[in-house]
Every structure is written in C-alpha cells, then in structure tokens.
Length: 174
Picture 1 (cartoon, rainbow, N blue to C red):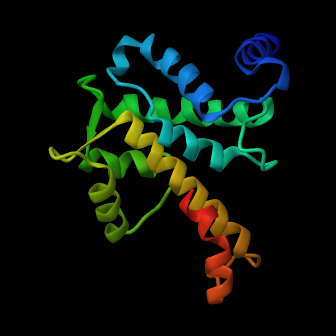
Picture 2: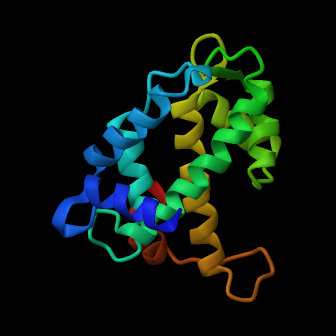
Picture 3: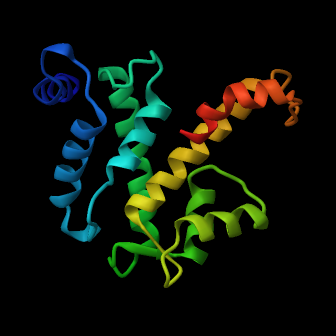
C-alpha cells in the first residue's frame, strides 16, 4: 500500500516530487467526485492553499510525499467525521452538527468560537458543506498548532508581545 501511495503521488507530482495547490485541488476533487455519497462540489483553490500552508513544513509552498501523506490521513479522518453527521448524504451538515463534528475532530471550543465558526463557514441555511468543513478544521489545526508552539510549559496560556503577534499573523491566517 505504501508503494502504491508513492506511485500515485509520483504520477501527480512529476519529477520534482512536490505538488502545488492546483495539483492538490485536482487530485482531491478527483477522489471526492468518485464518492457518490459525498455529494460535494469539491475543494476550492483557497482551501487547498490553506491545506498546503498547514502541512508545508519545509517552506516550499508545495507538498512533498510525507507532507501529502500526513494531509491525506487528516482528510480521510475528517471525511469520516463529516459522513457520520451528514446522515442524509446532502453534502452538508447543520451548524448544530458542526459543533459535535468539531469536537469529534479533537477541538474543544467555547460557545463564542462555535458561533464565530458558524458565521464564517455556514451558508444562508446555516449548513456547512464539505469544503467549508475541511477549511475550518485546517484553520483550527493551524491555530492550535501555533498556540502549542508558544505554550512551552504546557499550562494552556501564552503571553505574546505585539511584535510576536505581528510576526506570526501569517501563520495564523494561512
């Protein structure tokens, strides 16, 4: 299976063995389009850029094999959570279900943050589609990862100067 994954990645990535946001979008959309029960329009280029920003550990702006594998594992995990709550296979989950899905993904948030997420990611019917769900989790993952990097003593609090906030805004907003 590992060799099969590598072979597929090589076909996508070519000789440079890295994939761009548009290549990532193409491969992810091909995979989800084959899954009829997902009922999704696929991933936006913006979502794929955010995924690369989260997983690109070597700063190339592209994903190598290991980075792509790590992202793939996350997406499959998050897809399972989404499918669990999308019981009607409509391609959307309600904002109420979103709270439970975010919890299942390992993020414990307060009510104010859930409200912010709903305002940001829900459509006019207060539903969240698969692309928005993944985009939300990618951003949460990035923010939690950044917080943990600053929380060196592990007590759940950090103290940042204005300069530190400014210097790290690009990481948090990616």
